[in-house]
Amino acid sequence: MSFQSPSANNNEQRHELAAVADDYQPLKKPVNALAVVAQSERITVLARKTYNVLLSLAQDELRKGAEVEVHRAPLEEVVHLLRYDSNDIAVVKKHLRSMVKTTVEWQSPTTGEGSRWTVCGLLSQCELEKVRNQVWVSWAFAPALRHELLNPRVFARMNLAMVSQLTTHAAVFLYELACRYQNVAKSPRQAWRWWHDPMTGRVPDPERLEKLDYSFFKRDVLKPAIAQVNANTDFTIELIEHKSGRFINEIQFNIKLRDQRQLGLQQAPEKADLESMRQAREMGITDARVEKIVDTYGSEALASALPELRRRVESTFPAPVRDPERYLMSLMPGHAQRAAANAVTREARKDPNSPESLEIQGRRRQAYETAWKERRLAGIEADFRARSPENQQQTIRDLLAAMEAQDLHPQIIKRFRKDGWSHPLVKGRFLAMYAEATIGAGWNVPTDEDLLAVAAHLGDAGVI
View 1 (tube, one colour):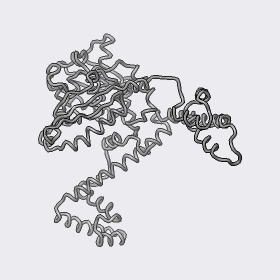
View 2 (cartoon, helix red, strand yellow):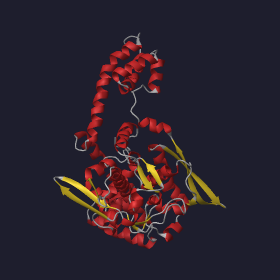
View 3 (cartoon, helix red, strand yellow):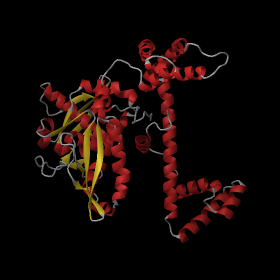
View 4 (cartoon, helix red, strand yellow):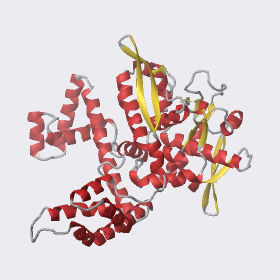
């Protein structure tokens, strides 16, 4: 499995998002499809995003005059609209098939809004077939809901390019919610537990939900989702909490549309950033000259050349710089070449099979595996500590005997006897042996879905 980050660099992708958005009309998602609650199995973020894409393609077909019950599209087109950057298309296929057996309860965030929809599957059928070396997807919606899905009376208008930037189910849900209620600038007010299942995609578990503390829901679901929507979309979302006595009872969301972000998505003439202008001005170079330099060499080349110019201006060796502008002009061709090379590298990274992309994918996988193993070991340690003292002592005796039988380095055995299993020299080996005994030999081998979950959380942190 090869990994491309689900959280790509925002600034680098503004123009790409605009291009994707222009290819298709905005998705009109019925309000009853916003706060769906899973009934049979959890709805993943990829499944929700894929459903949006299929709905968009079907609506696009209808706009073009094709009234069909079964819709068809190349899998490649579905993946393109998802902006799914992994080579492992099998994961997309798996989610497509799972949507047939995933039954949901349809509801609007506004109580009483929209007609009542029956509980049914996300899709009534979905098939994949290969035609002339191209994989095609065919799908159909539940007959009872098909008309309302394709011709909704009350709907949220949303941009699939924005949805593609979001990496958690909760963030996608919040973005869809913001699209629906942007004109009134505020979502409906509901009990905080009401929001849990639609936001997480989980199958309802009333007993578990009753035990859930609001502070954990806020920490683990609400705050990360709000931060992601605010960082990657047109909206600024703010959580509003309502108390009943001393406790938070209900919540809703303030929604504000940021016009600046839409402007940022449009193609515009390249300009020097304000920081570059400030630096150049401090060294005696006028704004007009800076704009001309940017027109010739580009803003990236200028931004990388200015620190070099400053270092030279602040040094009197071998002689003071008399004309900073002329010196800057002497630097620009070299920095322009490097900027062009960087652009080629960025373009190459878009091809998942290029050497640059493969190298990054390798680093990503290594980083994701490391993060997963750290979490795995933390969970294993927590499991051991949760055992009774008697059980812990018996396990310690058993694993000490096993270590002695393996003829490990005497220093490890010595530390185990003297300082216990939590000593840094012993802990890793102890937890590994404990995990193998309780879980099995594959305890430290993550599945592709395990790594995708880590990737959705980490993005490119520490990778690029």
